[in-house]
Image (cartoon, rainbow, N blue to C red; front, side, top):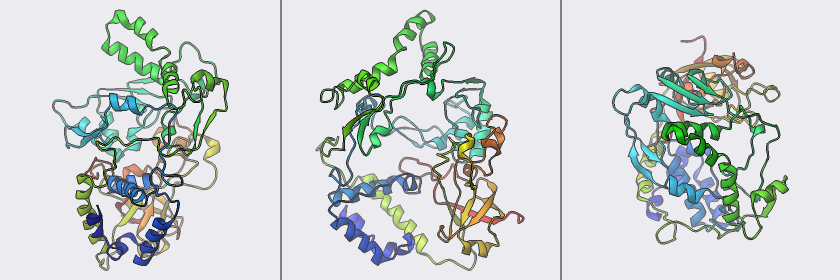
Amino acid sequence: MEQACGAFSPESVADGTGIDAETIRALAREFAASPRACAYSRVGISQSEFGPTVAWLVECLNIVTGNLDRAGGSVFPTPPADIGPSARVMIGNRWGRWRSRVRKLPELYGALPSTAMAEEMETPGPGQIRAMLVLAGNPVSATPNSGRMDKAFASLEHVVSIDYYRNETSRHATVLLPSRHVFETGMFDVILSRFAVHTAARYSPPIVNTTDNTRDDWEIASELAIRLRLPRWTWGMARRLVRDWPEQTIDFLLRTGPFGWSHGLSLKKLRANPHGVDLGPLVPGRVKLRTPDGLPNLAPARFIGDLQRVNAWIGRHCAPTGPTPPALTMIGRRHVRSNNSWMHNLKSLTRGADRSQMWMHPTDGLVRGCVDGGDVRATSRVGEVVVRLRLTDEMMPGVVSLPHGFGQASVADTLRVAGKLPGVNANILTDDQLVEPLIGTSILNGLPVTVTPAYQK
């Protein structure tokens, strides 16, 4: 590990990162000398050209500075109802056990990268996808090269959508099955508790009475599975067996989990405490590594090998440019009041300033003849959009930012609030052929685009 990273001196990476060598050294020394420190990263890096490798390096930084699983550093949460063991049994913790049919992209945890979806629908032959079940998702809008994905969905023989919104994807559905609203269902979060910064458990009961002709999304999926896999005479018995399955599963996980005995945790107790049960701060040392020797492996061969690609990227970005303005690099942007696109159909959350604009540094606007508040045409390998521009020094030169989650005019008849909002779908520009090579993650940040005034073609 030390030998592999030793080749990347502060001077050699300064131009590529935009941070001078002395600042890099100062940050490194301050981080290492701090009694408490934590390096943390999320989608900003994971959606980049080197997502898995950078995420690995972030954890290595915490480990080599002694900040992993230490108070004040990076501490693993202790979920009160942990689905991890069950997931490892049912799904496994593996990579590359099989690959996609067309591009040979690797599976991860039993799933393929979404970027393989369109080509698997379009390409004839054994294993071609001819039908799709979509559970409250919108892959037509949310995956790279959404124009291609839209056409691919339109070519399917059958689409079943479990959703109560008619969106860009569910408009292709031959069967649309609306599930209960979240207010009609109970809720215990088993996913986000694995990212908690303080340990607590809370169950939210339904706040609106349901009727017999409504179904939760898990009930719909279960019924479809029962009808597909079991003889007709067993359907009634199977329904009765799964009727209370979610509550029974959560109750079992709570009772057998780390706080079952010490705090008497159960679903009954959570129902009696509607504001939740405080289980205390995160505690280091509760998680054991699942490596053969119980120690972290800081230098997996797959990541060490990828450093050659990192070095080549640095070399390209340190090279001088000619008189022609280079292609701009597009990154995403996420607004709190948007939360992807979930909140765009709520009128109270869409008020205020236009948050759908493309942002650009004023210097880049001047070079390209683009003006603040004007429309510009952004073009990538797979598509182009016309969007309103905002010039701001909040952007670095050479970088533009376009938020995701907008551009729902095509379904304005059903998404009557979101469909009237300005903006375009950023995934018209993202490229489904751009994936990082380790696990096939789509590259959504760092996309090369050209931007010109909209009146130029």
